[in-house]
Image (tube, rainbow, N blue to C red; front, side, top):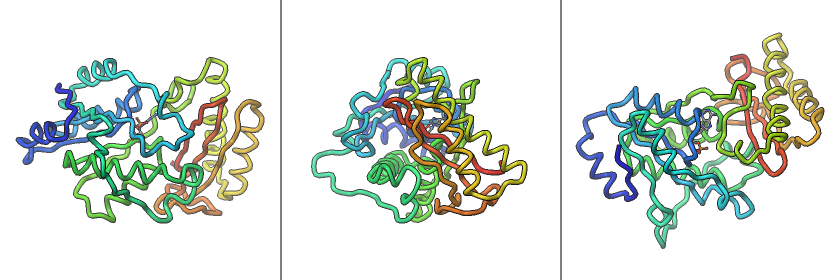
Length: 280
Ligand code: AMP
């Protein structure tokens, strides 16, 4: 496995593989089993795999956790090497955003709800860095996790809208045994907060059961999730919404398989998100 910091060097390494399939997994590092499920798929489904590790400053607002975002390059590289990854791309900020960098990708409508409403510049930062990574690596496949569902839908729309020649693979959420979705940010939680955080998957899970039992009314499901979270003091609901999977606009009725139920909470200073596709 080669760890590469420079765009030029990565391109040189990937050049001999233009007629082979390359898979790219974009990450911000501090890897867990959720990331590793994407990595295994990329290794298995392609001739060569690239994992990028880049804590992208343009997707963090000034009051967010950019400076304290967890990092452990050595451990990440050990995990990636053991998984059979070929290249780790770990550029520094100046390599990705040299002075004079002036372009940003914005997307209409899909960022209006869910996390987009609370983090107004976040997805433009995400789309811009993903577009750059695709332009740098020219992968055949790129891998994203369903945990960040709005991100996955918006990237997939960017790929379609801008005719980017890459197959998007979206893989299921990986959870801890008790149901909490794995996230690099879980490590901010102290043991008590970690326990409280279970309110989020539990409330979503209960709503998922209601859908399976035939509930179709979005308002009723939202009420149920709100109540489930309100029962746990110390967990503050930021939003819960039911949206159409393809344009992320609110719906009043569940369309099984096409409705995303997504929520964000704060537990202490930590913001956690989770979701499920109703009826799946
Ligand atoms: P991040 O490092 O948080 O930017 O995440 C990198 C990629 O891993 C994104 O596509 C995430 O959606 C995905 N990911 C993060 N957590 C999970 C999880 N628990 N299950 C599946 N994919 C995940």
